[in-house]
Length: 224
Length: 163
Image (tube, rainbow over all chains, first blue to last red):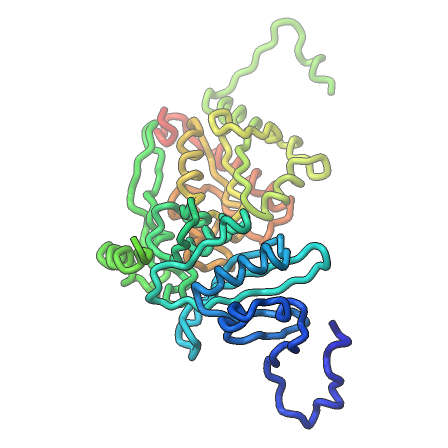
């Protein structure tokens, strides 16, 4: 990868580098059908890795093509990015990282997903690994994948009231980590009590039951 | 050790029940390891031959809470794990003691996030806290000594352990 970088001495007087479109002869780009090429908003090249940017749900046809026509048989990861507050096409971006084992070529497909969109198409029928990748993405962002047979929470508790990787969700949560009784053995049996007051005062107002109920209402996944 | 020479015939000794029971309890602690992170690695080192916790009578590690009396919480406890920890704690028979090992179990450590309990002592009683990230095996041994001192000072009729 290092030999692809421009010489620092040459690029000194040039404009700051921006993501350049991949050359037209990139093998993956060249093998795309015209219909698929027209859906691609941009082609990014970073550190020798190519990425196609599309708008959801166009990624479904593109991924099908890459899976069956170009033989990208290995899905490395499915995840998402929340661009809240940034000047981007849409709020969410789904990221699919694909790998071809014959020549060890890795490419990415980025799909912009609107905040108002009900769901994104699932790719479980193309790669089995998408089951857990989409499940985790649903767990963290609340994105619903149409066609995934099992979208239960993966990492968080099943009754967790929010989607914690959303950028408008506070880092320290909204009091979920304090919702346990205090156990105290007394006279041979276990007595439950409310936990002692949290020693930190910052954010105490957030821990009222009304607030938690409000959060639970607001953060219901789309499409339910 | 020559102890046999002292027992000539039908020997007997006099002591207080309280002292005898406490001596028995502190000399045979059966730990229940609740290892969820890197502190558990140090805990394993403490149990193994180099540091050898069996020198102090606490080597019978029980992976069943019903057979143990010393809960060692070593590692960060997430909000998904806290109900499990409470269930384990409930299943342990009285009397029982709890060591909160390391920064994460004691106060959440550096992980001040939505998913991590900020100190298990908010939800179960803790007898001894061990500082460190992770603590050295010597620190855990020291915590066991502290537990033994706590046991020495306990009164059987205090009602603390349901007697």
